[in-house]
Length: 443
Image (cartoon, rainbow, N blue to C red):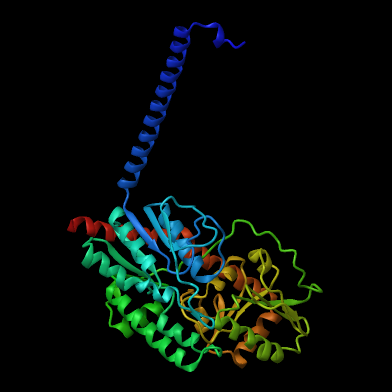
């Protein structure tokens, strides 16, 4: 027999009614609290300018570790923007989406469309209906002060939607990673691509980049060299272009790698790393194998170390290729010299930031040094081409451990003073704050 069975029907009804009223009151209080929190969040969101960041073909990782080029740049930019502004992100969908930003939206990227090794998904962003429909809904709802798009893909239609269709006051900013017309020439050297595809690909990229620049209010360039090229190629006013080299990371602590590279203490290890699918990285590694390793074979204590995502693992007489490494800075700290024998490539080479971060002396070509602030003979050896002079520079550092140490200290100082995240952050905030202030005056 339960306690309720001993109560009168009237008393039982009173108890049940009281319980129901108590539950309703509790839910009302909870609902009021939720509404209050929503009001506070909306007030906070509306009190700060809103920035829409669009990434055509990579994730914006605000918390996860990133390593390779363009994803590293846009993720670092996202982290900087997220600290000061209301940030909205549009990025390609993945099987596993990390919701590290409350206002992160995805679209179907058409990444399955490709010709040999050439993926066409991001190139077709201007006619991707999944992207365009998502973009229109977000623009209508959030009405951002500025829209930043990485790479030239999608900028033309985005600008038309903002300025002509929705008639918003949003500023369109092209966040360039390369001069795409120049980079397309490197892609066209891929032996697997048919000649007709190479021809039309280069023409297509030129048109896309030209239209993107014409439709952008401002451009972020990674180097002075790229800025100069943009101004000359497309007859631009240099005030329209801001030079910001994103992607530097300065580790607070370097955990030593457990990879065994050194047989004896007298060995000198010269390292180069990069993603193997990038044509310019493969060419540089081939140069090390076919030219530099042979020219310097007489230095029996000199070993060339290769690493990177997709890099094949092997050992030769004076070359060790270890493939992908998880603990990059710990791995690089095992080495003595960084070499960058790159005759081709666009934008800035973020691998040099990695070498600077661990205090390695650097030998590079002029192409490799673009945008990095290095000075020949002061904090690096900068050689025109990979030739006998490049070989001599390696010999110089192999023979002079004190010079290696001195150059390493100077490269570390350079990254701390010129490319520290705090320095870059201030430049971006000043740039965007001035733009947003101008917008507010026009409204």
